[in-house]
Image (cartoon, rainbow, N blue to C red; front, side, top):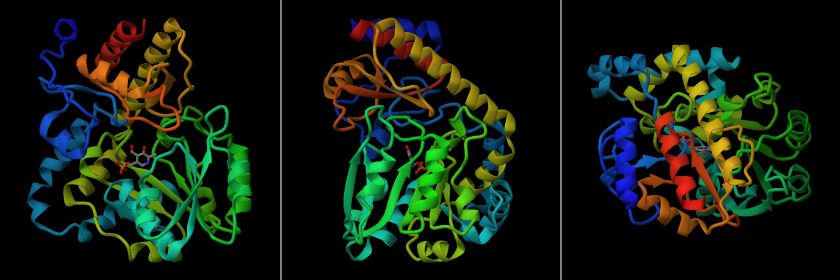
Length: 372
Ligand SMILES: Cc1ncc(COP(=O)(O)O)c(C=O)c1O
């Protein structure tokens, strides 16, 4: 019955076709085998990984096609043009930047570099885990600091936990999965004080979705020569998650140290795509405005259902479903929607990404059916 409803809905919304349903939480292996782009037929509505299904833009697709002849070459010699553009965009010199295979690669190499020889990393719980997962493999220990009662990062507690063992503090801002944004002044004061003692890492994967256009990037501290590292990605607003390209910005001596650990550099098509994407303001603005629209649609439905949620600064919404996430996941999979994974300790909360308008509308219908 559930599938019948979905098919009806998909027909009326133009997303024709029944879903291939997955049985468990997605792994990259499962995804490549079973799920196609949300634009294609027979696809599951994927609202689980905070991607931007509107990408890549038409201009970027064209740039990638034009780059096919270069795909027989190693990518390093192609990065200079992108480095120049990024340096101009961020107001730093090229030696402040490393281009990485997605920002995940930037997080991983930082985890390796700072986790070596058993250092400690202070990080929020819950937050985006790549760096900590990787650092542990290199011998690091993690000092977890629970988010505060508003689900924001608890900077005071993080500061209190600094000890002689601490090598780095990981700030995901806006935070994944809670979507909270630190007050600008608190963040600035924290980075200013703390970077005198330990390195601060600011993961700014969702920076482009912040509504306050004057909200500071911690790149401002990099420019002042502080112990601060910032990560950015082409996976979110630019819609290039499948290409694997992101970058780190830090003082040149830190960049040199991190460079030693790069394992998975990006590729020629991704570099060409990123160069084009940086100039495609029309697509950028479209992505930001579609995301805003998607968030509003989700808020409206949550309000109708009387469900608590966090006002989002990202391309996803974190809400309290009141159901165990494993149970909720199963219900949504039966209805052809893939929702975010569990984020302990918030087992009765759910993270839902903003997809296309049609996908979000479909999700909202299903949410009413499941929880209404
Ligand atoms: C906070 C945060 N940082 C980094 C990433 C990794 O993004 P990528 O490796 O695609 O750049 C993600 C992905 O969802 C994220 O949520």
